[in-house]
Amino acid sequence: MTILIVDDEEDILEFLSYSLKKEGYKVLTSNNGSSGLKLAKKHLPDLIILDVMMPEMDGITVCKEIRKDQELDKSLITFLTARSEEYSELAGFNAGADDYIFKPIKPQLLVSRVNAILKRNRTQRLSNEIIIGNISINKDQHKLVFNNTELHLARKEFNLLYYLMTVPGKVFTREEIITTIWKDAVVGDRTIDVHIRKIRGKIGNNHIKTIKGIGYKFDL
Image (cartoon, rainbow, N blue to C red; front, side, top):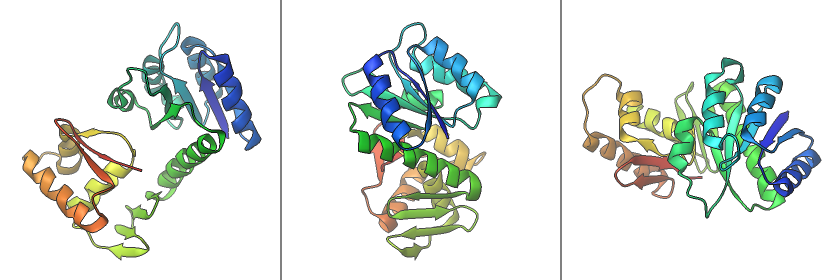
């Protein structure tokens, strides 16, 4: 598998590249957004790791441009950002990112996150099954397994949980949830809240987080 790393700090590029090459990945690097975008279009990498703040073209803009290119449709994108930066996770996910990684990050944790991103999305594409921690949800089989026990959820509850789990960490707005899960039906915020409460009643309160004034997200 091929991974493209785009970051304007040479030491970060060297560190990430070395860690991922040791795991057998083919690694491409770029030190600015503009050249990174050109490399992405040329090599069609499986995963693109983007720094947020970069010269010539910032990571958010690069991500948006990548998502406009149909040939890069299967490329996964994760943002790499320092916790001190004024970075909005919501803005990143809205731009089309699949995940995000905070730096500095230890080599073993980096490799683990990258492996999880690639495995999660590859599995999802093949079987519509998502496995995160102790939760497994299979859309084709309408099957939810929590702590090795199969649980029953009503159809809308199941679809809502699956939707939130497609991108762990992403904040889904209430508007996105209503449009995706209820489509043309007329429902209010109360309907979403009731379904979230029922899901939490089955899998506990730790996984689905309420983001006040925005919506909900599934936590790893």
